[in-house]
Image 1: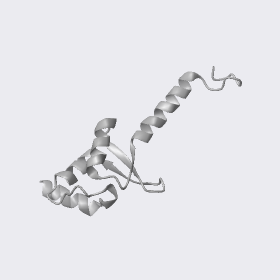
Image 2: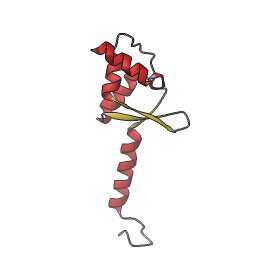
Image 3: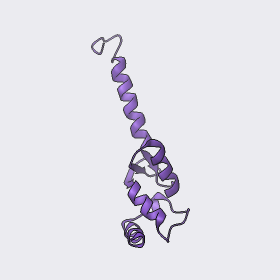
Image 4: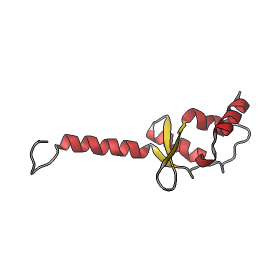
Length: 99
């Protein structure tokens, strides 16, 4: 009963809100994460993109599976590349090398 001041929101509303929060939290990653780990997170969450956050929790970007796969498959890739290291120039280079 969402209108009941004693009980508060209905169980359905709470479950939906919690599920939404968990879903969104699962799609956020830190910028110090490696490309390989980010791809694993995507696989586990069954999503095609991740929101990237800095150490203060601020959104700094968005990475997609296609972008990370292109970087990983490039000849310049090393397992030390972190999400914060990716730039548009890096992406252009990785895509050029992939084709």
